[in-house]
Image (cartoon, rainbow, N blue to C red; front, side):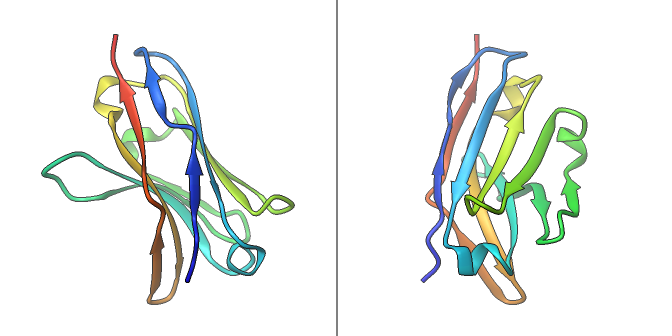
Length: 115
């Protein structure tokens, strides 16, 4: 079973920054594409950003230029650096590890952007 351990959520004012972290095992990190998704109540879970094992990134249009996904291969950890946060970024953020049809989720971490 794939374990994804998330941290870093919280309450931040509009325009502020947060960094989310997601740690997993070396065997998973070495071959899986890692990503972040977010979900608000009553809506589907949406892509935020993904990063492949080769470092290729993909972002949702709504976060381009504000969020940065990165991976630390020595720590088997993927990060989501969020800047210029807006109230509409408020959601539960989920870490994801995917390889073909094997799709795994973390427990989720709440991010709330409010003054």
